[in-house]
Image (cartoon, rainbow, N blue to C red):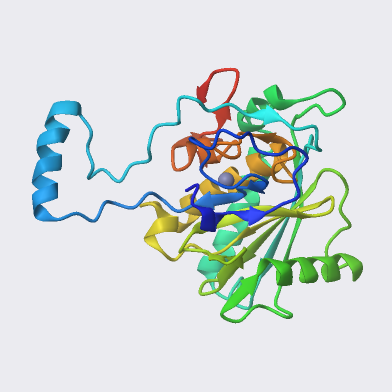
Length: 295
Ligand SMILES: [Zn+2]
């Protein structure tokens, strides 16, 4: 990731450092997405045989399609903004296909069970190191779920349309009103492309989190491309990318104003597409300043 098209403009409390040599995106812009799984290289036969010889020598397997190691210089810095200390998740499954088949109902149940378990799991304990005075990060809770078919997107949905709809749901009492700990997770149905800042799901990203002032939400398109499945099942891909966005929203709910690395992005970006299993669910590794590694 770190391509300019992945990035949305965001008001910044602090301009990005002027390290232009290593800066991978423009100052004042902040990454908030789960990037695509790194693609396998598209190379000529000559390049491939050269790469094979090189791989034998330096153990650099260009065919693995595996994520790059976390950058050695990664470090998250706190920019004095809000965190989500005890995250309360409300899931929204938006579209007619959700719950219309046993498979989709099972997926809804699985994702809700994932949040129930993960919000009281060691993954949340891991976030504790990013506590700041007055904002101690601890366990959260799953507070509810809703299937919504009204106004379901057809074809695609922009982030601004998501914001308009989320505000309308809150106003109408269709979803609970937010507090400082609320994080809405909006799951789109198969076939719906998410559009944010001119970028598209399955083309540039696999999910993102954002905010409307201090209302926090994440948008998770249904993974239908190899870049967002990364060789995983749909369920595992969704819990993994959801954990990426969850940890990013907790530590940086207003992108760039919480814990952020001006070169490498948010907590999940540094460790994208590296996994572990927590409470029986596939989750992504997250950057730890304390351990100086993805844990
Ligand atoms: Zn991210």
